[in-house]
Length: 330
Image 1 (cartoon, rainbow, N blue to C red):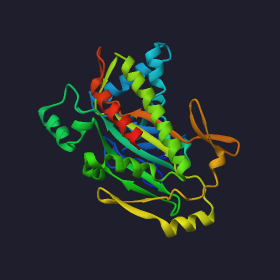
Image 2: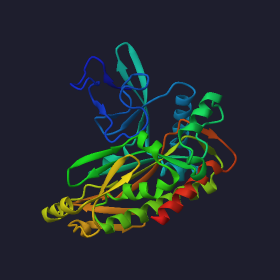
Image 3: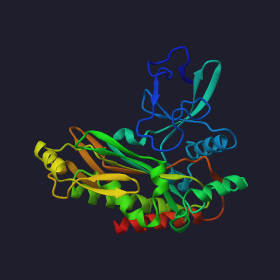
């Protein structure tokens, strides 16, 4: 099914019915991929990820098709579905005389008013078993600390409730992070929570979700994940009072993380939404009028390098264990 046509283009130059993906911090950006359009979002809210050239694209499609096959009732697979963005199959964009395939997956940030997002590449080894010598050397050179901790930061975007704008920390920021910067980087990510209670709840919920991921990896003997990421999201757009805004503007401190400046709220900042923040067994939520919105979320993304395996994925688990340790330190 085609979701857009080249005969009807929006003023942005993109096909009608799609737009650039909001809050993208890694992956196929606009100007990249087979169409040059990169990651997109459809009018009905889904993320459209361009299918990569074989074998990566075929491998990723096969993985999602297997995991989200409604006839597959394996308990390990059913648990995995809850850790991934929901998959809605393959769709196509008609551009000129070409028909370009896209993977249609859930937009994790759509349920947040102003999402703060961190992308973490998992594993000591991010090259798959079919990688060339050049690819292996390239991956090994990206960031040496990943060999020690089993993960590395790809980037993050943080919402500033005072200015109403986002601060972007791209892959260049991630490359500059060293092992002794990791705790500071995580605190900087969490520093945009609107209040001290919000930060405590976010850390607690992130740890709970990361433990779910670890429990699944300890049990499963189906897949080995290479160059896959964890996407961490929390709500950064809760309303603040006018007095709180004035106080923050006058008292915020700055702290250097890599080559970027982090502006973080003070712990004393009053917060008028706290009474609407509550926790359940399945997560933390905000009561927004008659709607209930998640306060945090964690999903496994980027599955182009997932291979069948009958062994425990210790490569992924090593980094996951270290990441949990760092969050417990926070």
